[in-house]
Amino acid sequence: MTETRIGVIGLGNIGKHHAGYLAAGKVKNARLAAVCTSIPGKAAPFSSSRAFNDPLEMMRSGCIDAVLIATPHHQHVTLGISAFQHGLHVLVEKPIAAHKADAERLIAASGSRPDLVFSAMFQFRIEPRYETMRRIINEDGIGRLLRVTWIMTDWYRTEAYYLSGGWRATWRGEGGGVLINQCLHNLDALQWMTGMPSRIRGFCRLGRHHAIEVEDEATACFEYPSGAVGTLITSTAELPGSNRLEIAGTKGRLLLENDLLEITRNEEDSAEFSKRADSGFGRPKSSREEMPVPAAKDSHAKLTQNFVNAIQGREPLIAPGAEGIHSVELANAILYSSLKERTVELPLDSAAYEVELQRLIATSTAKKKTVKVSNEDITSSFRR
Image (spheres, rainbow, N blue to C red):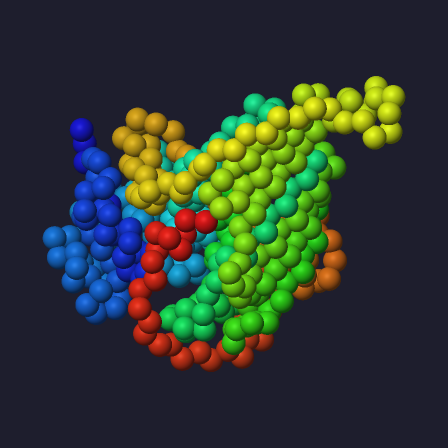
């Protein structure tokens, strides 16, 4: 089997994690051929791979077939476009871009090279919990969607986390806070399971709990084309925090909390029962089952394995890069709605949001000093 040579660009916390499992051989038919970092000494643990401090030099070197981009957000688009121009397959960490207009530019560049594989690092899509919920929804297991509620407040982060990089929690470097960074995984999983809403009203608090300029707390109300409604609540300040997801339909409900999925099924569609019932307080019988759904192991490596398999023509992508625009759009729309203090219709006007983001960047007064902090536990931190 042909070996895919991968170059990792960026060796921060998550980039080092990606390089580590590649170097350890956890992805079959692939090899960590190169790493690229601008920080002296960061490449030392990967001495068996070629080291570069210029990503374009690495792309031109001929020693790689694909890149895994794990740099700060604002670099994802320019590096991705350059990789396509150099004939390289691309796997980009989330988000694929800091804002929708840039995501559109990256997707357009990918479209000009249909021979190259473009994937996004949305490892929630291989978590058994979300796979199971999506399958039940797609099989009409809970009927017509009525309500979605996700309380996702266990993304706790300290001041030291925000000081670990000058790009973090700034409009220029990150393009936002909890929505575009941590909660983007939840936004991708949500739209993957239930589809995109048609209207959003967002309420965001900028730097309420930390000395940052972006949002560290957000609440959003969704309305779907079908009339279903949704609520998302997220924060990086709560302890112990919650992770509770409810998806209710006319035939039942899915409830996910604490690695346990509770599935309730109505014997009859509630809307149909309501039409024929002769009692004002009648209700159809229901059954309930509980299903333990522990977190997937090595989820990043498994999604990278899918990327390699797609390059080698052995399976379709689980997380196509072009689908990464949906979570970016949701994050942008929630923040834009909050800033404008009004409901936003989807699809979001990407040009209008880009203008707003540039205004925030231009008026930023953040002058952060950075501090060195110990490495966070990547595998547990992203296993929400």
